[in-house]
Length: 113
Image (cartoon, rainbow, N blue to C red):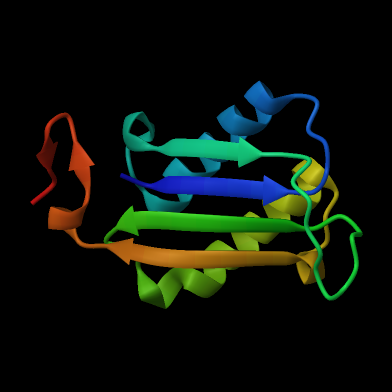
């Protein structure tokens, strides 16, 4: 149900650890069972931010019932995660949020509708 995509132009040596920590943070931040959280990381992606190839990260968080009123809080959490885990400052981070309709999210041959 929640899905976090992390794309960065930095190398990531401990992908498994990064994925585990990201999964835990997303589950806790959204109050969702971690068994439904999916996380993907794409490292060493050719990226420019503001015309510079200095370290940057793009994150996309999608979830059913993503609380619009909490996106600023979620942005702070995810930017803090990027700073701590990847050493990338918040001013080199974009986070896109998407609230998915229950009938538009499939799982186990069904939808969540």
